[in-house]
Length: 321
Ligand SMILES: [Zn+2]
Ligand SMILES: [Zn+2]
Image 1 (cartoon, helix red, strand yellow):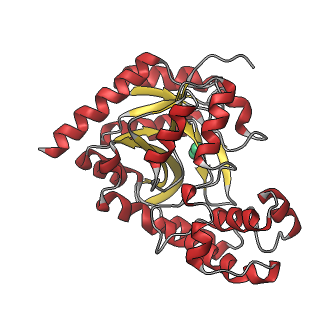
Image 2 (image 1 turned 135 degrees about the horizontal axis):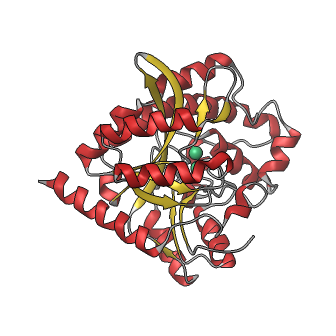
């Protein structure tokens, strides 16, 4: 597909469920011709992000001077939890590392942590025997910020693969019972739902802390109640967007490969316009084989980036007062 954008504000590394380390994502960005990127790993904050910035300089890519994360939140329709809304949160590094923000996303992490600990305990079965700390240090570049309490299940799998010198996908194919792609049981799944931060509360907290919220792939919501599947629904999306805008949402990710069908782009663009929301875009890159084809096709313009950066600065300075 044609490369239209050189700025990408939605990318995942092996800190969450991407296939490549943060520096590996930078390599990919450089290879396809991206100029400015922001990593937005799920529900986490990078510990060594400055290292990634330094590395990117050597590759002719700018890792932008703010941080991002994609938070799984739970949207309530009145009293009833209805869908999961993925919220991109952008902000100054120190603001994103604010303990109040981390504590909100940490609850949700508890469930992933349980999966990760289960996986870790089974590693001797595949010939990987090492302490938790040593596992962590196999690739400090991808170390999550919650060293003591958070291990992303995919992180454990990737580190084990690295230790064995095989690709993570190979490990998953060989030991599907150890490294299931989907969450293994409804009870784990329900716990996950219960621990998700409330969408509106997350927006309020972000506003208090001086962080910017951008609803990711706004017409594509995560339907939680009959299996873990995604749901494209413009009518529901419009209702959610209007309510979140009233609660203080800052922006919409209008350019994303899941926001193209059924007039979704037109809908979210017109809502952004009407409600005065900023707009961004990104590839949602995880790995070459799935979202790799969105690289450069969905992205953010220089004008949009300037507006976002102004917003980050403005909100941060307002929060500091
Ligand atoms: Zn998402
Ligand atoms: Zn994403």
